[in-house]
Length: 406
Image 1: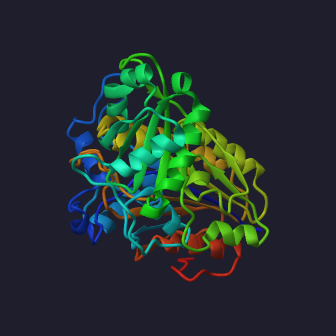
Image 2: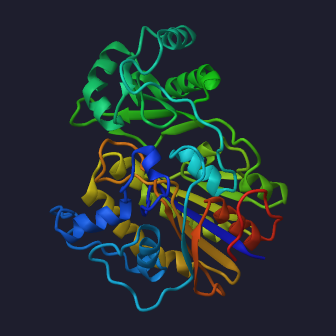
Image 3: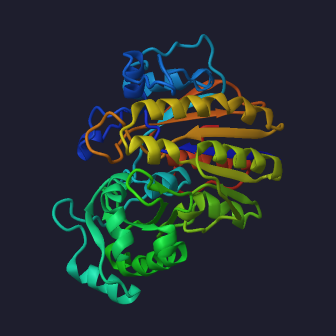
């Protein structure tokens, strides 16, 4: 029986979204702009990387051709391979948001066709009534932040005051999210997680997609560092996803990284964690050894988005892509007859774009494995085609959204 391995390169958009103007993102292109900056030498960083963006393995899987298909141009400085291996194409998002849950749920065959609730971009992000309820329910003296912010920047700004006062740092972004940063030692990790559970219940009536625990350590702005104990408290998907359908069919879903949190642990057989892309790849390779017939290993590689996209760090993003690309042969060596690997993304986060938020973009589709013939699958009208392709590959009935490209 077949197995499937679904890898989401978090925020690795390729531009060209037909509705980007609606989101203020017309012209955003994560891959294209990173390649352009690298080709111009602006993506160099001493001791990290230099020169044009080099992704030979993903290019051989069609990435360069996919970029041209999605955005109308080849990425600058990246050679066009003579031959492409596997299935390759691009997908547009139909969900109403450009956030993590919407992207992942649509990939898993369940588009989000409702509007999330959002917090105001100007002034206080959270109403006095909500803040009062949080402080009362969690026995807090108050909160810090209460604004739109970059997570690393607001921790650097308010971390010392947080340690001194014991007040958690609460902030949001253009996503439907309530984020809480707190010190693992001075505030306590378990206390932070309990606080997030309280806030999750309080923001449910506001239709907020996620409450995120952002624990950190360190004593000064120069030493503050977020840890790998992040946890997302998501609402349930609006209907059964590919994951639910697989579990119902007696298969196992191995959720690596934050996948379990994104799906509110529904349709997940087991959770495997790793701190950073390379650790997540190590755990994924382990899961590939352990996955049985008919199973799905579903991994989110979060660093692209969390460490480099939101921080608008072009050299860091480029180096992370190159490091990931170098490890793809290890994935290939793990494959058995009947296996399929599918690489994609959940949205964009163009590190050259204004602000610090996600960008509305198309995403790549690269699928390979023993017996999978090379061909283009074009531009798909929904990410749900990805989930339906995996469903078809694993031999379970089709869902109501999307269409397999096998």
